Each structure stands twice: as structure tokens, then as C-alpha cells.
Amino acid sequence: MLDPFEVIGVTKTSTDADIKTAYRKLAKKYHPDLNPNNKEAEKKFKEISTAYKLIENKESREKYENGTFEEEFANSAHRDGPFYREHQGEGGRYAYHFEGDPDDILKSFFSGFGGFQDPSAKGSGRDFPGQDNLYKMEIDIRDAVNGAQREITLPGGVRLKIKIPPGIDNGEKLRFKNQGEPGIGKGKPGDAYVEIFIKPDEKFKRNGDNLEIQIPVTLDEIVNSAKILISTIDGSMMLNIPEGVNNETKLRIKGKGMVLKNGKGRGDLIVTLKLMLPHKIDPKFKEFISTWSKENPYNPRKKD
Image: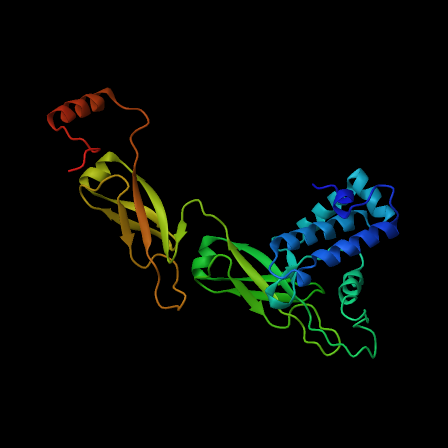
């Protein structure tokens, strides 16, 4: 973890006022609204905000020095579950706010535009839309195929029901109007966005609208054909292995992949056959293979 004193540019003997002044100067310099589409500035702003939270006053500095602040951070993150929140400003930019005094950054920001006037003060004449909030949620591949319903609790205790549509893409955002931060004055509330992340699956791999799976098979099954039981996203089914197929042959099962975005039909399941020999080779089997290879020589590395 970066040293918060170095991030803010102060020392351990600096006063609260000195730390606050240094923080406000840096926060204004790197604020995302003043650095649109600048990922480095956004990253720096996050570091500055987090560092300030750790050392903003004597109590915070003591907690940081003895490690209890980090424990509180970890416990808080655990209580939040699989979601974490970011704030989105105009133009789709997300800022990350951890500072102790939320008005500080507003005062610093607006001071460059004809002086600061508290937008929440009565008679200020300023109306500001509320910020958008971004929540991130992990789901498994089966929920991505079939759709699912989840529920999250927003700040203030509002419970938001999330309907995940079948066929959703990794990284896709679901929008919920007016569920973000409240506006100031006559400003409208912001929106809430839930960004979906699909967890890697041990069996299935997504490839566009198709799903892929590897199935181990025996030498007999791959040479002489067979019917074997395999797993699909919808459950088990019998698969016919044609006679004479090769190792890593791909078989296509129609309609067992992802639900298409238009809701009309599904992609396919691509099954890759993986030849697995016995862990222990029987001497008779070795002798048979040796004899057969001499009588039927071929070189798989030689092009026809």
C-alpha cells in the first residue's frame, strides 16, 4: 500500500490544516471533471482521496499507524457483499469519493468558476442533478445464459430488484432511473447502474454466442464410436461420437449455447474431444500398439 503521507505530500508532523490544504490542492488538480477521459488522473484522484481518509485527523492517523483503520476498511468491504459503489459524473465518468468532508471538493472545484456558492444553501439559485452510482455484481455462467433475479440494498436502505436478462454480456450495465444520488435544488436524481461480471466456469467457456466444453474420451470411444453422457448448461444429455474421429475433434450441438440478444434462439455448444490414455499402460496393450504400428506405419507430422 502507498504511504498516504507521501501521496498527499505531507509529513507525520503536519497539522490537520496542512494536510487538508495539501489534499484540496491535489484533489482539484486531478478531479475527473477537470481531466475528462484521463485514466491516470482518475487513478491519482482515487489514491489521493483514499490517502486523505487515512490521515485526515489525529484519530485517523493513530488508527493508520496501529493498523486498526485497515481492519475497519476490510470489515466494511466484507459487509457490503459482492457489490462496491462508484459515483459517476457527467459524460459517463466515474469518480471515487472517500474524503472526510464532501463539501471540500465542491468548494475547491467551483472556486475556479467565479467563486464558490454553496449549492445546497437556500436562495443559491443553483440546481444540480444527482450523481449516478455504479454497482458491480458477479454472476455465474448459468445465470448469464438463463437470466436471474437479484436484490441489492442501496444507501438509505432502499432495496433494488435486479432482473438479469438471458444472454447478458460480460461488462454490460443495467440502468435504473432515478435510483442514484439525490439532486440539489430542482435537480433530478441520478441513476443507478449495475455492471455485470461473469465468473469463469470450470466446465464451460463462452465464445460469443457459443459455449465450449472439453470432454475426455477413451481410445475405444474415439476409434469405434460411442454414446457418452455429457453435461450441458441445461443438464445432462447423450452425445454420439462418430467412428474414426480424431483427438481434439470438435462436435457441435445446436441450441445449447447462449441465449441470443434478440431472444430468438440460442447459440451452440462446441464439444472438443480430448483423448485420455490409461494412467497405467498394460504390457499387452503396449505390445499390440507396437506390432500394429509396424504393420501400419504413418507419420501424423508429415503433410500429404
